[in-house]
Length: 211
Image (tube, rainbow, N blue to C red; front, side, top):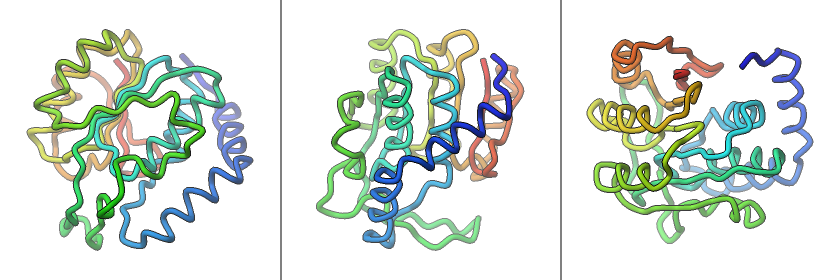
């Protein structure tokens, strides 16, 4: 599926028109100063608009900033479902290797996905638990996926586990996305395993592999 630069640019422009959505995300991040802010939100919106997936699965939700961008794109497309898997984590995560300050994964007293606007939640399904425990059964229940997005525990072992599990359920030409791919070599190793070409999408942290 070829998508022109002009079409991609038009989706960024359409996202800019969502003034209330953008204001909501910014106010959430401003209020929770320690909250980890995804740099990939606009890219996730554009990818979802362009590929028009029926089913997307993500692992790792926390406040739900990335989830909100995906769900807003699905609302604009007029269809689609986001299935999320997450273990609520209220601890701070230290990132010494890439020179970033500690971030708060989920503020205490707030539920998983609290940043997702209420009007977008009808397309969202949440499963709470660890990937190693729930991912196989959730994927089996879904059958096939159009997009899989990894943003949960970024350990080498967990990333490879999720990539290998999800790949079997991706449709032909399905898309595997992963955030923070620079933390270890799991993403590039998996691309060699498949084998498939790996791409970095705008931000150096977000990677993509097309099946």
